[in-house]
Length: 145
Image (cartoon, rainbow, N blue to C red; front, side, top):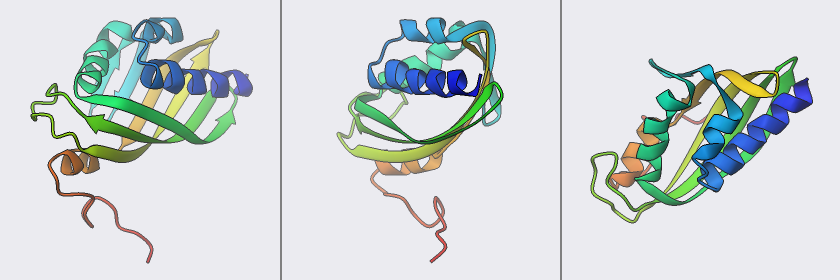
């Protein structure tokens, strides 16, 4: 079961984000799947499509790398990194052509071969600072050194 969750997580990032396959969203998640992203919850593919469309309307040359995966039972925790080029205005900011680098973590709960619930935490502030030309600041990331 844990391996199935890990494989589904890798498939999600590869097909949905790296290949931009919008149809893969409905293939991978159930209609009742709830995705918790900060204070926002979306339900099923129909609830997730607006987010997918905004990100793809804002960025090109997107590549998400799965850095680590931890699994237990039917769940997987995935640490990922992403690079993309800001080439569209779907976030309400005119395209800058800047390349962004962000990181995040996603936890997926899988049942019967599909994602039934997910939690996301990623560096939205860092993304906005980078496309606005500020780079990552100490307010975005406080390192140990």
